[in-house]
Image (cartoon, rainbow, N blue to C red; front, side):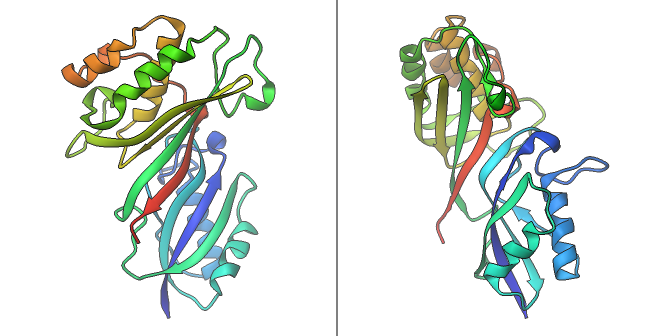
Length: 247
């Protein structure tokens, strides 16, 4: 019997060239599909909620696949994990309706960007944060962050090379949390453009350093000019935290 299986996946993206399969480059999707072939004895096409770039991590990526299998849903994750490298884990495997699509049915996503703000980088955060040794003005960063809330044309917050129908997105939540040397940026939205969260994070870092004024975000939303904003923060600080669905 053909079933539709939903997976929740965590991975360390350091050794991979992003989510989507690429020729002659290791990716998360390809690695999981190989494990699925081993377990299911059939070619499987895995649909992810969205792409993550090279070096980006996930704590709650969602994907689905269809397969003719009798393996109990809770045993699928066990079988896959036995055939996956330790930097990729299947957290959940559940049966869902046949029309469920991890990409097109996503209602919103939450990303977290992690900054290590201290004079010396803790080596255990080297692969999972952006190191900023300079003192950051959190108040100014929070002031600027409020400006992205709501529905806007985020064209200025998109890296070149992306082909999308519209650059209008809605940011539902955005906040900063500080815990010791770690500053975590959380952004929840109905969708994100290519490098959008990393551009937001990089701009906030530049604002915190005093290299940019908080008003640059307001100006970028109005003028739609990437040059109004700051740097694109490096990929290792970015995590896909959670994907929510209407069904």
